[in-house]
Image (cartoon, rainbow, N blue to C red):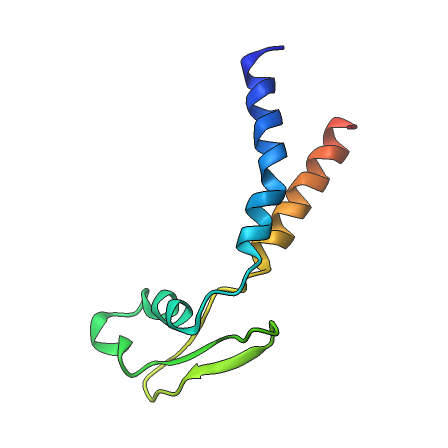
Length: 94
């Protein structure tokens, strides 16, 4: 089997593990830190941050006055990867 097929097979077999890890909801402090990172440093401390609770619902993680930031949806990568794998299977007929 060519090396590229082995690499592709290895990536596909690791995908469910990676998706499961990405589907977990990070602690509030991590969500806040990641959500405010794109802001200029002078706005980060006073930004309102919306994120995800342990039940997966959108909640306010921190109140603020300057801007509102949204933490990354932990299930977004899972949906995106599932779509990509589904499209690849349709394209290749496998």
